[in-house]
Amino acid sequence: MAQFQYKARRRDGQTVTGVLEVADRSAALMQIERLGLFPVAVESPKGGAAAAAAAAGAKPSASSGSWTEFLPPNIRHFFERQRKPKLQELATFTNQLANLLKSGMPLTVALNSMTHLETKGISSDVSRQLKQEVTEGKGLSEAMAKQPVVFSSLYVNMVKAGEQSGALVEVLRRMGDHYERFAEVEAKFKSAMIYPMFVCGVGVAISIFFMTVMLPSFMTLFKGMNIQLPLMTQILIGLNDFIKRWGLWILGLIIAIGIIFNRFRATEKGKRTIDRWRMTAPIFGKVMRLHLYAQFSRTLSTLLQNGVPVLTALEITEQIISNSIVREAIARARQEVTDGKTLAQPLARSKIFPQLMVDLIKIGEDTGDVPGSLANLADTYESELTIAMRVMTNMIEPVIICIMALGVGFLLVSILSALFAMTSQISARGM
Image (tube, helix red, strand yellow):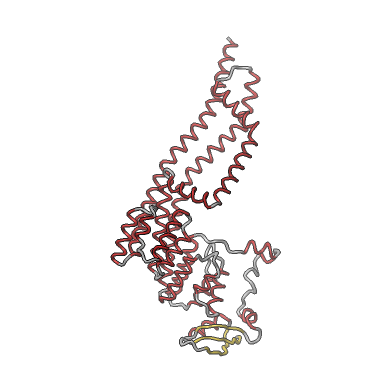
């Protein structure tokens, strides 16, 4: 058993101190919470926090005991730094925390348990740091705000609203559902593009193999026979000679165009031009628009449902939307709402959002249920998005297959026609 000196707050805000004799620091925290106190600091009189960690059997650092501790500090930091988690990973983390809190665990105990739960993409150090901040008296949202790589402004403001309203568990559950929905949409979009990209990749690989390996062998054979080659074969050989002669120049031109394009895209004008093209492009444009409408509706609905003020909710939604055209429209709407206008009017004037969205938001404003109207809109656009992605895939697949079939067919016909010509000439000579 070890002694721990603690400093805690009562519910009325009064600070109390004392000493506990328990097995480790986690047990001390649990004992303090059983007393109805809010722990502020817990340390061992014999050696401060370090001695408390040693008594608890804790490691001095997150990397201690792992293979990365043998690396130089700058390299170890590269392997251990927290990356931005995927949507599904964040949803899993949120649902785990919500389940622990719903079971009746105090927040610090729940965060301590989260350090032992494996959440792919989110290091246990994240939960450990959150627990440390909360133990020192900070709010959960304040602690999360210090880790912007993991928790976005949307997440932090939602948690803050949950803390203020006393419905943190419900807010976390809604957040988990929110991220799961977007993860599902993202997964559907990626899966819709897998097959077309696979077919395109196979076709390109076959063409490169044919042009670099098989064609030179056939050319040697044709030159040895001294025959008149068909037109398609001559075109293929000419194309091969052109690529050999100018291939590096063409590659350099492509790289130069790519660099110029990236610099143009980095400018404000370039980003707006590309974002507008994405929204108006045939086939793909409809998918992009539906995705943006669904993201706007779902995010704003989730924020408003959890008590976030409308201006703050619009500001957070504006930061989350990646398309600059839609983001500018939201910014203008937020400015007009600040001046006292309703939300539906500036959205209608932007000419960016569809009339259905404007009408339903207006109905929500008239009935006092804007979050409900936005949630219905999000459901509608997510359903339409699923159908649109399926239609896009069904249209793209045959187009790509036809293009690949024409390319590979041209290569085969060019070689086979030359072989037939060679066979005919040999037969004629034999006769």
